Image (cartoon, rainbow, N blue to C red):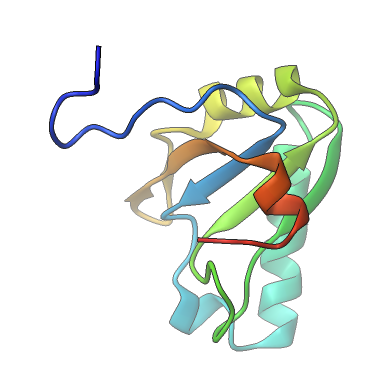
Length: 111
């Protein structure tokens, strides 16, 4: 059945997650040291769920700004991370989490 109005169609699991509401671009992405700290913190937390191959946090002016992309070695790691991170409060905001197309991720085609 097609998704109900207002619902995103469910994407089949991939090794890549796209997270929303994890950061405030205006505050978190301007300063290089703060950006590095944020990325390290996210990689450390995300690495608990599986082997993380990459973490991409687009900077101001880049496609996908405001998003965090996590690339896991195995789909199981991405599924576990989605289960743990989705709906979690982070800096007072509720984290959104969706699987993301691996080919788009590899091509750096961020949304």
